[in-house]
Amino acid sequence: MPKTFAFLRAINVGGHTVTMADLKERFQELGLQGVETFIASGNVVFEAGRAGEASLATRLEAHLEAKLGFPVAVFLRSGAELAALVAGCPFDALEQAEARAMNVIFLRASLTGTQAARLRSLETAEDDFRFHGREVWWRCRTKQSQSAFSNAVFEKALGLKATFRGLPTLQRLVAKHLS
Image (cartoon, rainbow, N blue to C red; front, side, top):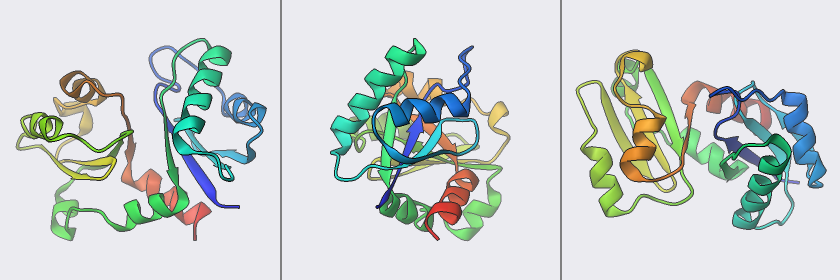
């Protein structure tokens, strides 16, 4: 059965602590099979069958909030989508070499023209962005902790929920589950 990847926002940050065993159990409670977690930052791999993505994400969010006591945004990608994302970095080799951090921002839908323009206005000498489908790529040329850009800045500026993952984490997920 094909793999589905869930990227969760707000797991093990902001005073919330969830063990990966607990997170795995929450997914299994919904009847999902082959559930595995990947590092303690809210990455879950499972077999979803033919469930519709939007309805599954809504079910997961409601279930996680009921069980954990706080809202958790869920961003789902199929194995094919994740493999294509990792293979299709929009920054060329030189641009990647200049990066101190390369991140992917997961969204529920593509940015609108207004949202893309707003994000472009946040670009600096250290931070720039590329958009593709439901993802935004963020290249940071300094330490992320020194950048003025963050998940909180993104969400406030664009009025969207999102979760960020480093490209190395995504590459490891693909190598482990899709190779």
